[in-house]
Length: 271
Image (cartoon, rainbow, N blue to C red; front, side, top):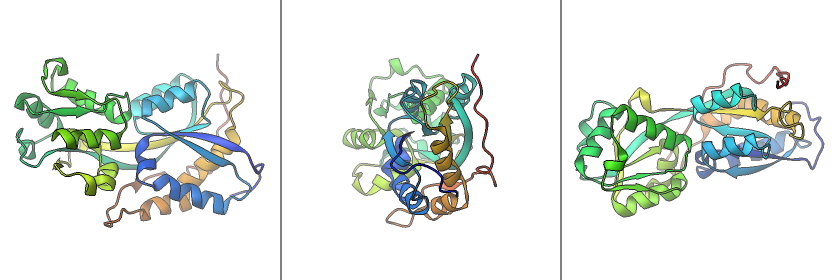
């Protein structure tokens, strides 16, 4: 990596919460600093995907790390995002009371599991924060043809994944979580456990992109691209591949395309 950036420069990375909550971002940024001493300092704003995209739309971030492909593609199509690249993936899991009153352990699909939860009368806690996780949850309710307004014990947290997990544990409720955050906080959960996993529909892809300087000329595109090249390059991908929690669990699987970070994309003009 070329060390051509001005020292002391700060850039803002608006990131979804799971890479920050699990500690992965700390590891990546620390190694980035070590290998790019003249590179920018990175200030992380950890929020849901929807909030991260809104921050970037306002020009208050230089790059984003998020996990909702549909929202990301819309963001790029609107002209706000540039150099979108896949970084890693894990999956979503459905947690709930160990007694599993809805019986979702036997559900054949995530959609069926959500349908069973809605008919069980058991409580469900939603992030309700327009994050990538919340958006995926809403898609499952829609596919299951469930009107959540008719659910008596539907709890909207309006918080990040860690706090929402705590609320679900307190109410012994069902919840959709990304696997990484669940594994990172598993030891603190007393009442809920993993009940359903493995459906391909639960796949959870993370991507990174820069904010388009043609839309917001003040953003630091060169510095943002430098970090994008690092995280999608061999060193960043190896760090992701080797990242484990305290019990040795794999939290994320790297999947950046080979040489994805080698070609700089020219910022597009906005009509």
